[in-house]
Length: 528
Image (cartoon, rainbow, N blue to C red):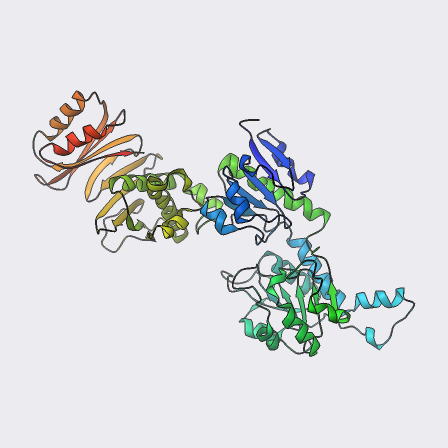
């Protein structure tokens, strides 16, 4: 058990969906809703009931991953997880079918007055003018949010011959092909929709997005549907709007407080359809969500592949990470080199990588460079999750770009440049060779050919006879073996550099002796 990856499951997950954990005996699953002994777990899986708070996360010293079986992560303190380098993932697509079907069910129940009709029949009554419904045919459905769930709702609405319009500020590119969806501003969406259905995540920007102001923009007699997050709707404002008869009704599956006892909307139950946060509660979804999350966790711990990452920086799509594997390793080594070659405090780090790299790829490379640099100051607490967080916390700005016009940087070369608070500068360039080998090809302006591995002794010196001999003699006396030596210079008789790969760590006393040798301007030991 000692070497197994321990996984805490604190909310109910479908047992059949957890099968991926049981294929090779690598994982030890523990179900415990009390969240005891968090410090002994590598991964923590939750649904919506468990609150992964700052205090609980602080106890989880061994934790590497928190997984949410579902889409939203508002029950997880993502900021604290990020600060501690804990990856947060979810299973964003697994519940799309169930939630979209539930949204359509709410729309139909509201427009055809299904709940009121049921109550009427059960109580011995029969049809009357108060049960007159409306058709969906030809009506305009407004989707606020056009991600996976929004798109599934659109497909179903189209089957009812509805017109579908949408607003999504985060949508990249045109909407899904073949759906004939019109994208527009939020204001236009609100004014045109006969039915407004919410499908946005809960963020600072969407909290109480549906408020007095936005409700006043809605088409008179419109309907509101919410299967997203309760806090998106200001329930007091919704109650006022229902009371003024501006809205014909609302159907909600989620609430600001759950259950919604005491909510002002309950006073208008004759115009509401309410369900108890069950949009994703289907047998198929429970298995699908657990299975998708389980596969994502297994992939992360066994293959280093991140799927469904919530708190990763830009550029960390699985296909990019796989394609750039060697390049990321190289760039992290370059960052570690700079962090030791020019100790902090640092002011900024910039990365230049040629046109062979897309913008997202440069972002991923920059993150790797930050990890390497900050490792020199913070150690293992820095990883791909929190490198950017710690950079900002320590006042290090970071930027990735193409080489400037006229730059000698080759297309497949990566250059990191660092500036210290005192105004000093250092730069290093590396390259992944066609055979996959990693190389440092330039330190500052001096060309070298060095493998970024092991212990490197970097010596800046004047280019004059006898310098290599002086260094070799001193290291020999100190019983330090040289495994490899590379030299570079810019011009004869000017500035030069030696990079020696040595077999053992070098003492402070020996470094002092090297730095006192005539002709040596600086000697630094770098461990990669």
